[in-house]
Length: 203
Image (cartoon, rainbow, N blue to C red):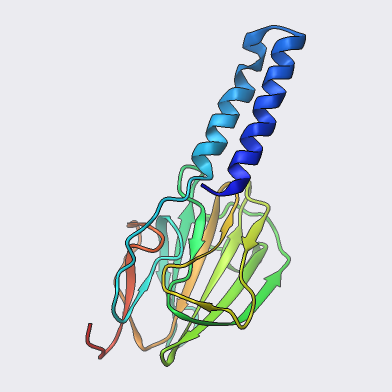
């Protein structure tokens, strides 16, 4: 579990105890329910990471777009609702060469415009002769992107790198050397679902 979930749950539970002591116990029930939800929301399950020349999903959620924004590139967009695991993972192994923060709006993350207009962190990973970029995109409810790495850090495929709080979107951009294996409407899991495979490379 992400530590933030414990802190939120403890704070809400303390508030619930105070409300119950000052008024009536059932008035505190919503706070205790929210405390339990925080424990659920901030869960961080272990995942089995596939090996080979593949890219794994950086986030849990539903694939809402697979499209080309520029010649030779393909973008896979994943929408996370509040019931998905929100811990983000690196899609490939390599070195983080860039982390760029962009201020923006807080549109509903499932909308196409969110990819370019919402607040976001753009992360580039270079490894094994390829480059993959992914974006942590804030949404209507999500107002904070958390990224725990910095340029120069080396990451493994499927390694935890951060999270987005309370509903969001993650975009992954691939070059022409990748075959995309997912399609719109599929549900993917961070670190364990293979979303692309390097062309012409043996497993």
